[in-house]
Image (tube, rainbow, N blue to C red; front, side):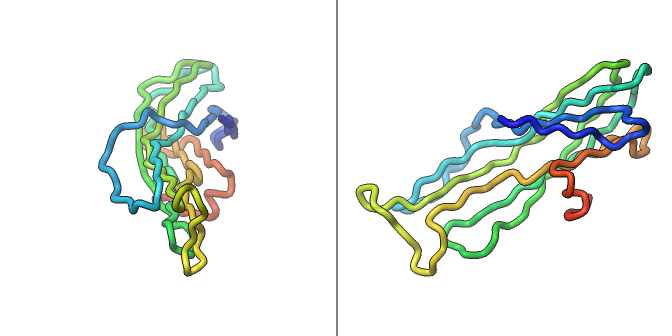
Amino acid sequence: MVLLVQVARAGDSDVTITTEKKRFENKPGPKAQLGSDETSKTEQWGYSVTIENQTFKALSNLQVKYILFYKHEQLGIKAPPRKQTKTGACTIAQLDSLGKTSFDTDSVALTRIALVGPAGGYSYFANGAKSSAADTLAGLWIRIYQNGALFAEYAYPAGLTSSEKWQ
């Protein structure tokens, strides 16, 4: 796994936010109806987020809001992947001086699906579409509010704040 690190925007770098992509324990869900020539695997993915207080004073009453960005690709379709989002929030009652806390975001179901030819042979779509499709995590945008005012902001990748809109 790759550790994604970026310093959050805050007054005098009051906090450091680090994130790491994380595969969550798979929970059985409804099975998709697959054709006999398709194989599929679905996993739950999200982020593990660590917030570190860089100040000599405790921070209290922090409300963390985030948006997970991911892309859904459809098998047999030549169109680009559809962008999708999932929002979430958590509350941090107190973050001690020079302390840190961690939480996991909500997870999203990411699916990989592919055509499987007879006896393992090659299969293809007549329209020229790829013979496999995979959903992917595209990014994470976090905003931290203290007493209702925006206190810190973090985005991975960094350009996410200019290419997407906060919901």
